[in-house]
Image (tube, rainbow, N blue to C red; front, side):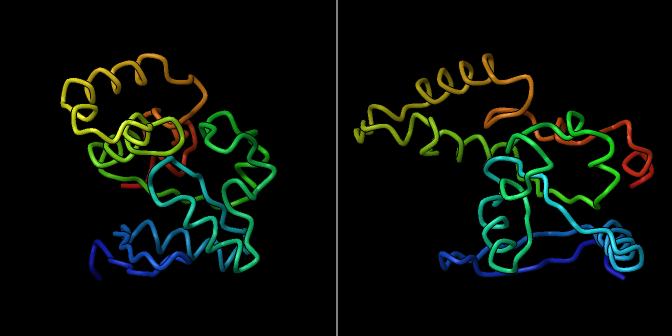
Length: 165
């Protein structure tokens, strides 16, 4: 069996995307999901195709990410989710190359500089990009937001996550 599996799909908006899945982890999660009948839930990390995944789930009648009320705040770190909620479900998340993610955040319409009204190339210099990113990273939320590190969405104290790999 291959260590990685590539899955390609088309979003509801017509965008094509690919996700590389680690095969062993996928098998463990799917086995537990189907054998133990635990619902599969989604941890949304910003700028990692999360909104598309939530929309696909919503169209299939699945409450993932922002549509899952028990999880709490939309981009909340997983270690802040109550233990009874964590144990009740199997969870998955999608991560992205950190450099690509930061560039996407810069151009994001949720507070990114590149989405501002300034359409001049002089507004998009490396110096402006670096200063903007430094400021956003310095003042990021301690509970999870658009500028939080992806690894903080893991809960390192859960035994299942320590054994994977």
